[in-house]
Image 1 (cartoon, rainbow, N blue to C red):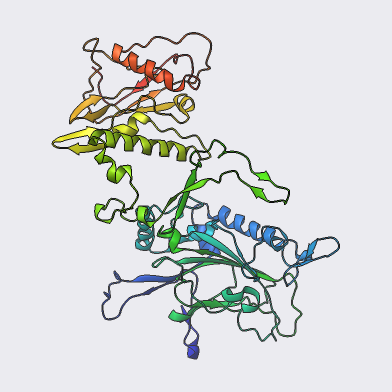
Image 2 (cartoon, rainbow, N blue to C red):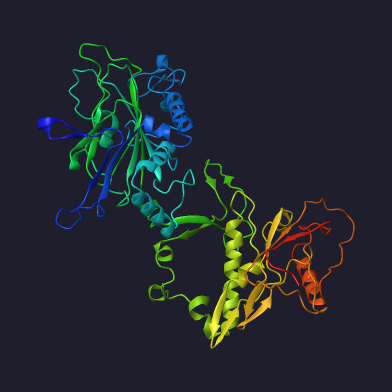
Amino acid sequence: MASTGGAGWLKLNSGDVVFARELDKGCACGCDDVTQAALVNEQLLRAIPNGNKLVDNFLDAKQRALGDRELRGPSLPVEDPDTGIFTGGTAFERTPNAHSVNGARTYTLGLGIEQATYAGYEYLPRNHREAMKMQAELVNAPVIGDETNMFFGNTQYNLASAQPKSSSDRDLQGQLGDSGIVHKDGNDAPGALTGMVSSPDMPDNYDKGTFHLVEIGAYASLEETQVMYFSGLRRHGGTPAHAPDGEVVKKWAYRCVIVCYPPSMVLENHGITALATLRSAGSEDSDAPPKKGKDGRVTYKKPHGMLTLDMGVKNNPENRQQQAWSQHTTFAADGAVIMQPEDQFNFFARSMYLLQVHSFAQLPFDVFIDPDDFFASMTFKSGDNVITAKPWKYAPVLNRSRFYQSHRIPLKKDRFVGGQKERLSQPSDLLFWLGKKKSAQNNAQIEDEDSEVEVEVPLSQPDSSPPRESRRCGEAHHSAQSRESRDVAARPTTAPKAVRVETSSEVR
C-alpha cells in the first residue's frame, strides 16, 4: 500500500488485502481478522488456471458491448424520430436488452455473473472462501453461472464516459445516479464481498479515475483492467475519468464497470423461492393456450399457481417446535383422526412423491425418480418397530423408458419393513438378478450388504417380438406383470441382449 500523505488515504495496489478486527477483542495473530477488501489486476487474473482465456473473453465482450469507436457518443443513445434508429451511446445501450435503472447509465443484467469476479476470488483468504462455500451449502443457495460461484447473485453494468478536466463533477451522479455517489448497498449479505470489475477504453494519457472505500480510508486507481473486492455494506464511491487539461474529450472514451453483488436474499436464501408451477385444481383447461379478446387483452381461462418455498420451509424445517399451524384441516395435522398411522404415512409419502414427479418434470432435461428407492428411503417408528413406506405398484414414473435405456442403472438392494431387512424388488421387466440362488423362492445373498450393484444395459431398439419371460422367481415375475400396467407404452418391448454386473462383493 502507498500513503497519500496529508490526505490520510491509503492506495491499494494489486495483490493487497485489507483486514479489520476489534482492537480490544481481536487476537493479534490474525485469527480474528475479517477480510474487508482486495485488489486483483489483469496480470494476477491471467496467472490462475485458464486465466488467459477468461480475461480475453471478458475484454472481447467489453469491446462488443461498447461497439465501434466511430459509432459511440458520450451520452445516452438518441432515437431518430423518422427512422426509429438509435445513434450515439454504446452498442449495448442501443439494443432492447438495455434496461436502465432509474434513467441512469446503470443496467441490471439479472442473474448473470462475470466469471472474472469469482475466478479472482482464489486470491482471497482461504478461510473466507470456505466460509462462503459452507454458507451456500448450508442454506441451499442457488449456484448461478459457474458451478464454483458461491459468492455472487446478480450483476449490474455501469457505463461512464470521460469528462473534460474543467468539469465541476466530483462524482458520477450525473451519469450513474445514486450508484455514482458515496453510498451503501444495504441488501448485501453480511460477511460477503462485492466483486467489481473495471476496465477503461480511453487514451493512455487520460486520468482513469479512482474508487474509494470511505470507511476504511483506502482507494484504488482504475488505470487498468482489475477486480476489486469490498464490503458493499460500507460506504464507497468513485470519481469520473478526465481528459488532460485543454484537450477535447474523445467521444469514444469510456470506463466500463461490472458489479457482481452478493444479495442476502440469494446467498442466505431467505426470500420466497418460486420453485415450479402447479396446475390449476379441478380444471381440464388449465393448460389451454391464452386467448386474445377484442380489446386486445390476453387472458387465461384459469391461471396456474406457483409452488413456492418461503422461510417457514427453508429455515430449520426439521424443528417440530416451529411447525406452522392453520385453522384449516390438513392430512398432516388431522389425518390421524380418521386414518391408521401407517395409512396416514403412506398417503403422505405418495402425495409427496406425486409433487416431486410433477415438479421435476418441469426441468429442461430428463430426470428419473425411482419409486422403489423413494418409498424405501422413508420410515417411521411405531412402538418398537421401524416401518418403511409401502411400495406403490401404480406409481407414475418420470422418463422411465429413457432412463432404463441409459448405460448405468444403480440397484439398491435392501429395505426395512417392521425392523426386518427385506429384498427390494427390481424392475424385473428389464433387469435380471444374476447369481446363484439358494432356492427357487429365495434371492441371491450378498456378503457385503453395504455395497452397491451396478448394471450396464446396452441400448437396443424395440421390436415387435414378444417380451422374454422373467428369469426370477414367481414373486418377482408377479412384480413385473404389475409394472407392465404402469407404463406399457413407454418401455421397450424387448429385454436387453446382455447385462453386465459390477460389484465389489462376492455373489454366492
